[in-house]
Image 1 (cartoon, rainbow, N blue to C red):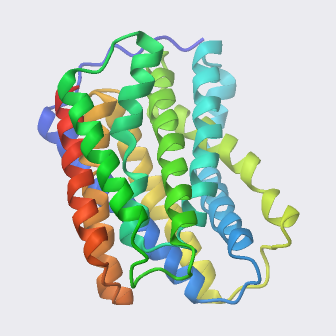
Image 2 (image 1 turned 120 degrees about the horizontal axis):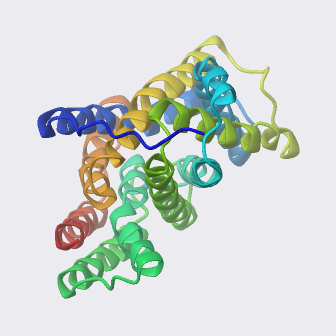
Image 3 (image 1 turned 60 degrees about the vertical axis):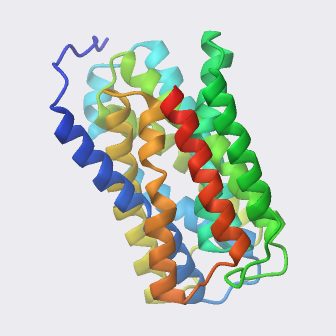
Length: 304
């Protein structure tokens, strides 16, 4: 069995640097997904979203295949396995819901709502550990709720369909799943898993769940252009292998609420890329709602 790693924590500046790199890398996911959508023809937006999610996770799992030899030679504790697999299941749900949201709402709205994770992390921590949120946390949650309602009420010029409410709801579901994913990942590493072993188990679990789903919804893996496959490969490399792995590594050393607070920069970076690549100009209510939402999350996360 693997034992707990007693390594001293890295310097705070190094942790901050990896968090920034991870957030920058993760923020490319939505623009890359939209580029993949624009580079090919598909009959079902949901089916192609599943193709993107499954391909991203399958390629990431393949990248970590060499790690499995070490896992087999020195199996982790059962609790570590349990939390890593749970993280993989939550990650699969996160990608199915969030990538699907990009077919119905704007990049700014989707990435803003999917980064409400600090609120859900605080609530789940309350439920698991019995530590009630502070009054300042509740105030922040109130602000965030108002911001979410403002975003959800705006059609926005960047929305690809007339159903932005569906995309916003899917993005929120993605945020809840991401919170479970990050919390489970922290617990898996606390049980002794290294970041490489944890990533191999979680990414492989998500890939196994996601890979057959496109076929069930009439999609396939073999009818797309070279550009589409290039974007899918970049999604696996940049936001997943670099972005998510860096963020999960940071979870071992600092509070999950703090990590998700840093991830609040993602809508800013993704929105900027969306403006450069697609000329997405969000409506006034989205801009106002995003400001209120991010302020609320910052208040709640700081209180935690």
